[in-house]
Image 1 (cartoon, protein in one colour):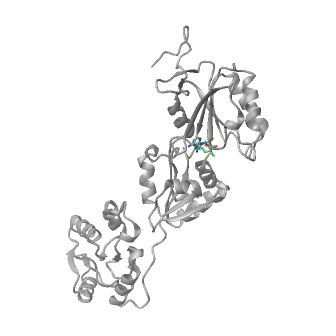
Image 2 (cartoon, helix red, strand yellow):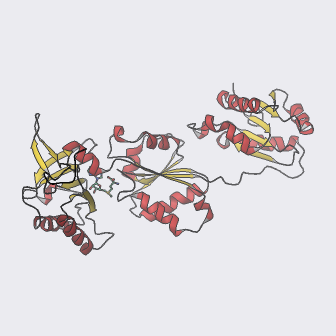
Image 3 (cartoon, rainbow, N blue to C red):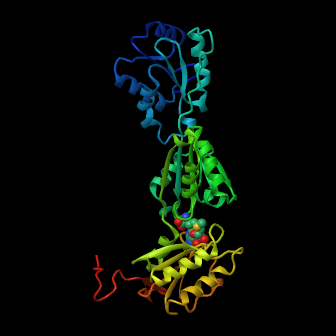
Length: 388
Ligand SMILES: C[S@@+](CC[C@H](N)C(=O)[O-])C[C@H]1O[C@@H](n2cnc3c(N)ncnc32)[C@H](O)[C@@H]1O
């Protein structure tokens, strides 16, 4: 059953102490079902029934208590499905439109104001409640490789912020969810926009591919917070939800090339000097780490991968296995196993992660074609690394 008019409640929950107010509300809204707030259970059950049956409700009582009672039934609801709840202070001095803005709670609050004969409009909008900002990792692309907690966060979000490709990957979304996607690569701009929205009380999700903390949006968001002294930003409920990173998903397809110590390097010199990248390649090659190379190549950075491979060839044998994972977890997925001696830079683009083996990494034929690649967890005889 739903209410016939936006300024007509389906249910009145009245405090036994607030007789004067109660009498006026009862007289004005005679069709509304009446509940006395004589026990916490009665109020809680009444509020929940009202939400579940789509009826709006006026309650004489404390806003926090009411929100707590309703929290379990509100989680997962779309904004349009939350029915209006107006709270009234027991002395009649304050009328608050608490919930149901998408379904006309303001009209009901104004009606209550009139009924109580308040001289001045006493409808007070709530002070903005701190919003939530979640930075989520979508994983490589396949829906099955996205964490359930990320899916849940996306379902509850009001605003979805991110690079257009990733916002599309995160969908589909409902019409009431706002998509703030763009091809803008200014991560800090996006992070600040997300905070602005969350500081207004919105539930915002920022999407990243893979893991949000691996060359992605989580850093920009935390950095934006660090740079801000706005108390409204500090009050935002910030959460980072992890995802499966490209190196992990490509490694799993190939076998277990990351089975021993490994490192992750971005070959992009957009945000750090090329000299730093060369130095790190040199050091990781010397340390005999398996290396996962992200952002290996792009039209704007055509020569860097060839140079990186030359540095690695100076320290590793030509037979060193290399895994090329392209578009892993997406419809055009391609996995190639090659070697340091054979790899050609043109096999690699921006949608590829390159895993370069260590001196221990091995490859062997699979029954159905292709090869398995793995890095043993121990260094052979005399090693202190015992297998688990
Ligand atoms: C800006 S980084 C983002 C990394 C992402 N946050 C992650 O954890 O996978 C982009 C790079 O990640 C790698 N990448 C991301 N998704 C991939 C996928 N599905 N398959 C292969 N490589 C991928 C590519 O090297 C690409 O250039």
